[in-house]
Length: 254
Image (tube, rainbow, N blue to C red):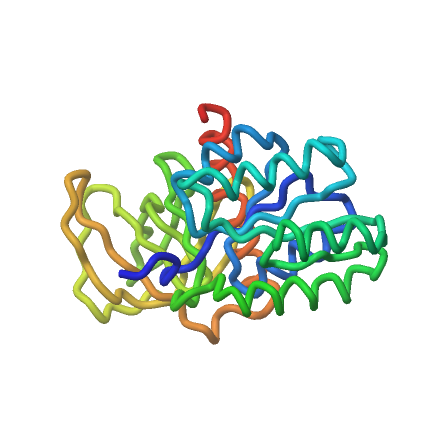
């Protein structure tokens, strides 16, 4: 399988506060977005995800010489040479722009944050689309560690409980308590998800079953009609939060 075909991780190094709305837009468009604030730890993580994209805020963290050296080091290190680099800054300076676009040849643009959230969001989305950041993947998924989230299902007068092992805005993978087993095609009308203090209601059906060492896992696809825009956005936000927590743990040990 080609690198990046299942989507690319998109990192914002020292994300400025003005990006809050923009990041939500990217999450809603199913881009896999992460935030980081330690350049060296991130560089070590990027070595294991060599097809990632990183946007660097030049206005925080390092000085001009430090950021130039950082970008050059990404280029010079074989494990990170293929990383897509973009620049964010409030400094609309032609010489600075020319240095990064022409000399350092960053592939993902030089974005002036003074343009406002809407324009910045538009530019970043076009950049990510051009760099095929979603790949062939349609939905960002989050692998759920034990204890991350629970699922309650009301089915034929019985309350079923399960633990989430995987979540996206399209569906979930769950492991039922007490070994409950359902055939493919079974419809669940009353699904209640509880993940990290957030609750979402939906309906869906069993799309697949798979055998794992910890017990059988049921893959449940959500009925799109059961999710309005607000519910779908909430699930995407939860997926992003679960993935960010996993990334934070990875960065702490990098």
